[in-house]
Length: 408
Image 1 (tube, rainbow, N blue to C red):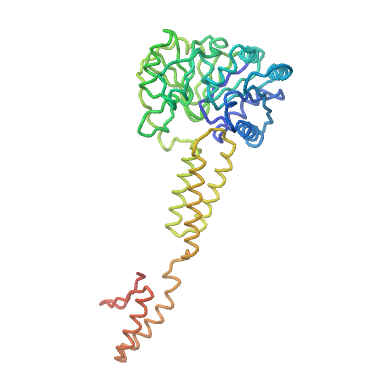
Image 2: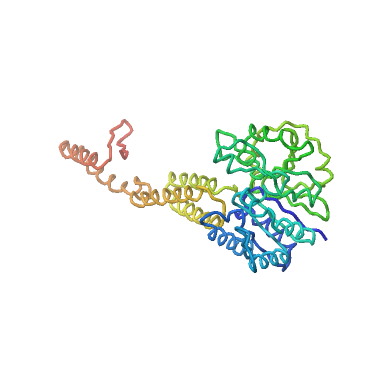
């Protein structure tokens, strides 16, 4: 029995991918589940990333996992123990970090063979984000290109997809990324211009497999089909032309190998709002949405609605707290939460009830006294009442239909 290779475009420790993870673990049973920490092993907060990932799978997915440390190639007994745990694992996971750093630590070590061996004996290998980039024949040095500005070029990958599926694949996660706003950050931050340039340097039979964010491509090596899960799609691209398989698609490996894309790659239009899933897939989007809910409740002086929006955002922050993706979205959400709390405090000071309702009986009583003074031709008293009301923020208007008042 062969195993399951799962490629996730992003969101591997986000609330959006809990359901796919749970479904995948049903296949694993009670076999050991391990996290391979190599891709982020160079980061100063590597221990924290491991802790959050372990916490996410325990609390959100309901499955205990443990870490196999290969931040740099271990030696002696530590090396043998790490390899033994990979050989025993029924589920091996790797995610965020740097693909080129991971490849550097895995080259000329038994790790690639351990991953292939795991799949051949029926285990599950889940590679996401940075780790996913290492799986093809060629890999994108994404940090070096996008952050450091080196000339776009491929580096050799593990070529694990070809070994276990026969597909001459290059894997690109974050395929539908839109963080750039006005500039193109699709295709794992490359954009169309750079990807088109790099694509010319691939072998003629190379097949780009693009996995959207918060999306999984599950390659069943026994059934020889790939199933698309999550919120996005799987794109098959050759020579600048693409075929997109949306979530829910089940496609045979032979179909993927034989497809000749006929559609030029172009930005994909967002799905209609009515068809969107309940979760947004973005902490920033969830925070912005709840700020709009809060603003509407604030405008309506709906205290319960304001409080509910604050509590919902606090829960969203808790739900996303285990996400290992490094971004400023958490800071943005906390800023939104602070703004909401401050505005709620302002509402408490001002009073949520309609001030006309609160002051109305007092104003009406004073206007009755003013009317009596006017009837008695005591205009000095009448004017004094009007002036005192005006000083308190109540404008009195004498109209043909009677006396009216407004809060100024």
